[in-house]
Figure 1 (cartoon, rainbow, N blue to C red):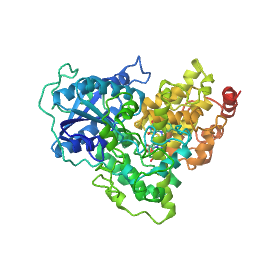
Figure 2: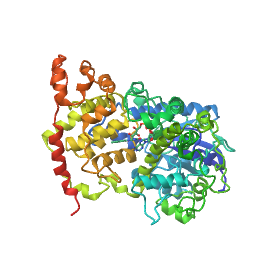
Figure 3: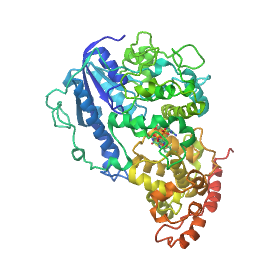
Figure 4: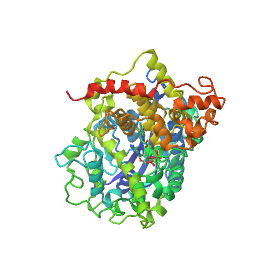
Length: 578
Ligand SMILES: Cc1cc2nc3c(=O)[nH]c(=O)nc-3n(C[C@H](O)[C@H](O)[C@H](O)COP(=O)(O)OP(=O)(O)OC[C@H]3O[C@@H](n4cnc5c(N)ncnc54)[C@H](O)[C@@H]3O)c2cc1C
């Protein structure tokens, strides 16, 4: 167990909750007084507003609003526990060391982030704290296995999903998903009534209320449109609604008009729900055989056999002054009071679900198991980003795909604009983009369809679509978004083969046969019979009969799929092995 200290600061980033939280649990275990802070980081917010740096800049950003409302929810929860949130609007890299000094915190705890810019920020904060005689303790929280926890037998990272997921499942232990209890013996300290730290860009005192959106330079975007309920309270509601459906997930998840998937992605992105809690819920519904092993033990993978020496941890954290004892405490160390052999679900809002016994119905178990697989995909992409950070600089995961010459010029720009605005003349693409532009959410099947259409029907560089998604997705997460786009563009690890090209019309017919999703989002096509709506060629005739004029009431198709397919095969031929 690490040494104890009088005051600690917990720095929240994408973990906006007060339960099952590795950094909070460690701080409460090891400090007497625990302050909790969030910084609206101007390094992140400024580009969202800056048209010169971001083609899709907008003051109406649902993510900022979601974070703000989630902070209000969390602040209220912390106040009920004697604490409260310190919220700052400044450069986090400068503000956190200043805040630690102002509060007299010996240690700053945070949960690990995997994006290269965040890793660099944490390194800089770690160095600044160290120079002032303080420490930064970084803990694994948003994944079950991180960085090089799971490696192949030959010591490489996994670049193919199936063996990765098998290793993940094989190495899952109760300790890895046990609740990180946030109940002391340390206590939450309320925000002190002190002036802004010396040199802070935010002049407000430390106990100032959470800034309004307008103070941050943003305007309301409307969370209600996509049913995006913020905070831990919202997450608990979404999860409660999903768990009764989890058993059908495998059979219904591809149907966009059904409310069949969890819709937890934004909550996972901002940590208003605990990933460990979700894995426990999936296991309790029978996923992965229902029970993890009791402890990490000797097996063929690296999990549970990490080198936790201070030197190794400092090297692995890229120089940040990681607190070795605390980091080790986040793994299955024998004296770690977070590690409990039995699943203890506590008061996390998933308790009921977690305590359910595994359903006997094998079909229901399969639903939970397939859902667990999606959570594993999420981690797969995090570890890809950790091991191949060059993808954050725009590189294709498979370098030969950077030889492709994408469509450019006025026509490509016009096609891209039509794609963004849902004016391609392909109803499934346009309906998906209409939902996306209105709500910030898009169903996974439709993300694949529209991404494939942009890249393989319009011949446009996947990076342009990736950037549009990054600007608008409520659940935008660099690792998952890049992984999804590179999967569709075939340049990613374990991606769709380059010669496989989705036919948007058959995808539409297969996954929305009665056109329920299409008609909802494209009311102009309401009178077109379902059997004629999917294929633009048939649609032309059926629309005329229904009194709908293509080009006026609904766009004519901007490309012809068969011709586009031929061009794409020629374009992609450069990746063939020489
Ligand atoms: C082109 C493209 C871009 C994408 N961009 C993102 C993104 O920026 N952020 C994001 O969270 N997901 C992204 N995804 C993955 C997926 O589409 C969403 O996670 C999912 O649609 C969210 O809905 P849900 O919460 O109902 O998911 P569920 O089906 O209920 O899945 C549960 C959770 O598993 C995770 N998950 C599911 N599928 C994937 C996947 N393929 N890859 C990684 N994680 C997954 C998500 O956290 C999700 O909330 C992208 C997929 C594609 C094809």
